[in-house]
Image 1 (spheres, rainbow, N blue to C red):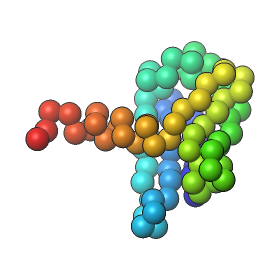
Image 2: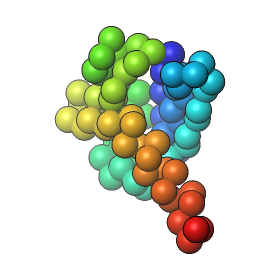
Image 3: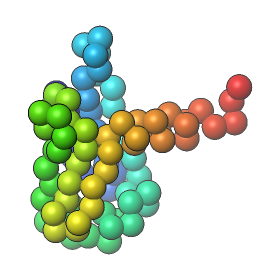
Image 4: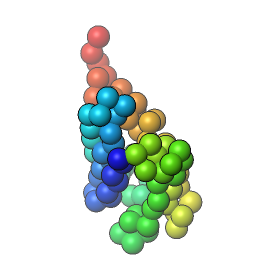
Length: 86
């Protein structure tokens, strides 16, 4: 299951292949179109890709002509959280 909510952050929750969940909260500053959008525009989205449910690949905002790849967001967040380590 993939859950998306947009507040002052982009909240995404998804079920991994092992059944566990992972959650990220991305700052809207990363997404200028979302940051500059109205609440109504930000909340008008749909999940897209393979089944568009548990295995959704992305999020589409038709009012903003914006698409985001969910897997890329998780990779980006992981890199951001782990910068400077290793």
